[in-house]
Image 1 (cartoon, one colour):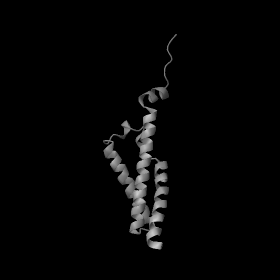
Image 2 (spheres, rainbow, N blue to C red; image 1 turned 135 degrees about the horizontal axis):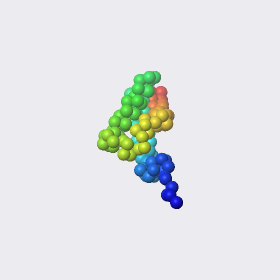
Image 3 (cartoon, helix red, strand yellow; image 1 turned 135 degrees about the vertical axis):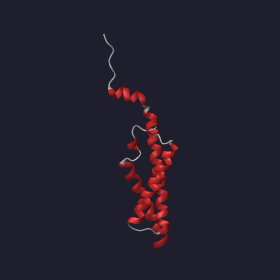
Image 4 (tube, rainbow, N blue to C red; image 1 turned 30 degrees about the vertical axis):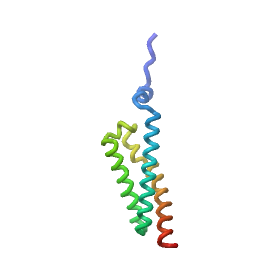
Length: 113
């Protein structure tokens, strides 16, 4: 009898530690959320409105990704299964909703009330 040949998925999973990748994704989500909170406070305090406010979000999002890239020593493939995990649409949407919430609260508390 011959030994069963592992499938491509099983051999790929042997290269990665699933728990560590999940932890890395969780830490990435926390960093994006923190950047969105800081960006929302900044946009609200500066009184940015409309597209300038959204521009502030993307500046802070890119700043967070740049800082993380340096922290990962420009080798994200060692910590994530693919580089696209850093720019996943779910991260952008998650951060954007947090940004809008904080931006609205900060703007309203200073300029409306």
